[in-house]
Image 1 (cartoon, helix red, strand yellow):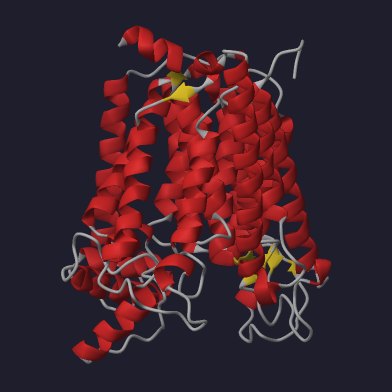
Image 2 (tube, rainbow, N blue to C red):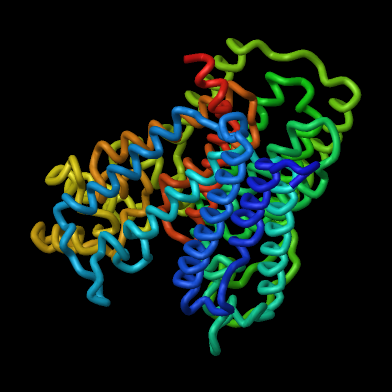
Length: 506
């Protein structure tokens, strides 16, 4: 309430803080059942969000202010189409009758990770609520920044050997299970969280005239953790973010000084990783309980040198930002860079020790192997083949584990890893829910990104774009996905117009 009037932006901001400030820290003090804890938290906070939104809508309706405050954008139809098709897939999917280990319908409660329709409807409600009113930006960014800082602090303390909050069960530690870090757990999901929030904060800092230094600080911490966990999808998203920041700097001179500061933060994170000996990654016996030690590698030297140069450029651009580069020139530069990168990956003699880069080299040279990406490539290939049998409704929400197991048995194929999803968000939607669901999801993402770019809402565009990119190598799970749908809803509200204006146009 403000001056006796309801304040929808303040409510939307409070809900944004709920999802980006409280939810990432939500857990029940154990990695042993953190997924269920996050699932329960997502349902609880979804209920709070829906109740708050209903009360706000009723209050606005009584005061005859609803049409002036409520936001509408066609992307909401794309989201509705997506969740509607997921519901139809739960009825008509080829494995819709499957029960999980607890005797529950998989399409409702999920197979292992609670990604059935109950959770999917929760995501839909989060999006719907957050898309109703545009949130005040500053409180949401402050909440997200505080949560990210605390999260990175937990990770840092774990690196010193502390069992912060007792998250590691007895007999476990960062040395025995480095795959679990922070208040989210699995580092693949940590990467997803960082790919969502770090671009949001760094983008917000880069595109404003003054202030927001807490965003740069927390964003820098987020990039440092991304470098330290070494999840390849996260590093790819970080590279993508850096490229997008450079493009914004080329087009908008006002962003150049702060953009250089953001890039310096990214390189500082790279330098920090080069100065840390992490036994679980750098030791020949990674399970040995060795301490984290300071060191100095070539990576550290390169990162520090680049950060220093970029910091100097930030000061220079602060005084003389220069002129904008024409769009045509930028497009030519992007095309030339893309061609150069592809040619380099294809033709340079990349050693097998390069990991993912070597695997990409082999794929582009027509030598793909199922074991690439920890058998991810094989999972993708067989998932696409399996989806041909049920292209319209798929196998049903979260039924992949059972459908793929049966498919591989019938084909007489064995993968080196067990998959309860294909570790690719888009392939998962295709196999679980069919082509229409995938089309609606991609259309939703593309539509939101285009609308954000037209309105120059760069922080939200960077956040959604980076998260969508890492989704190629990851999957939906209640540890992170509720935050993504909240951000997507905030983006829809930011792009929408009041209902009253819509009726005037019509």
